[in-house]
Amino acid sequence: MNPPTDGRRQSPSWYESAARDRARLLLDAGTFAEFLGPEAREMSPHLGIFDLPRQFDDGIVVGRGKLAGTPVFVAAQEGRFMGGAFGEVHGAKLVGLLRAARDASRDGGTMPVLILFDTGGVRLQEANVGELAIGEVMRAVIEARRAGAKVIGLVGGRAGCYGGGGLIAGTCSALAVSEHGRIAVSGPEVIETNRGVEEFDSKDRSLVWRTMGGKHRRLLGGAELFVDDTIDAFRAAAIALIERAPAFDLAMLKAEQARLAERLKRFGSCADGLDVWKQAGVDDPAKVPGMPADEFIALAQHIGEGRHDAR
Image (cartoon, rainbow, N blue to C red; front, top):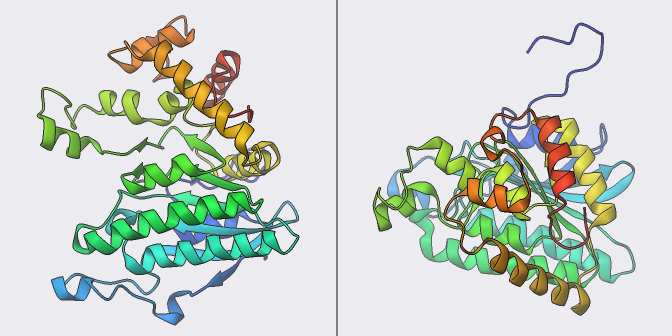
């Protein structure tokens, strides 16, 4: 990556960075402290049975540090190890981090949690414990939020945010997503396998991105912020969302339920992302996929659709 010619520092690409680098560079310089790092060798007890390689951190980096001076917990999934998929150890590390945030918040402080999603879902080789891990993580997210902790999801990695990861993202206080980010419960290949290529062609990249991609999720109201593919952009989004994300209470839940009911009424008859964007107020939906980040961010702010009150 060549440095900019005007002397400014060029922020690394979020998409191209490894999980540990994302966590470290997202936080204030020199503040990241990892829990259960590779030296602890907390590896999956299941993958060896299938003669599959294991990783010393089981594909997730967890720790704490500071973000703009505020103490935070952070978890970063490594999409380049088994697609960032959830297994027993992977899930347990995230549950432990969320419970630490819950306990810290109950003790009078507030410790936000940043989850850097990069996952295809649950590992097939650890299906049962992986599915249990998803449920435990979702419960832990809600417990942390009830205790007062903001849980912010950041989506822009290679593997997207699929399967159980998509469910967990839905329980977060707020989400930021980039062009590369994709959020869905079922991935393109899963839909095609179960419903046929006539229903969904997983090789049609345009279809995938206008159904699950970051721009679509932002316009549909599935994410609060759309950001450029840089660590600095995600950092700014995380700072903003910690400040703006709503408290977890009955009023918020009722408002969210009403918003989702209205969204279904408004977009329920749409057959394609292009139809959704048109209905949302985009004058020329065909231009959305090719829009530079800054132009799309301005468009999304003008449209004004988003979850909760964090816009």
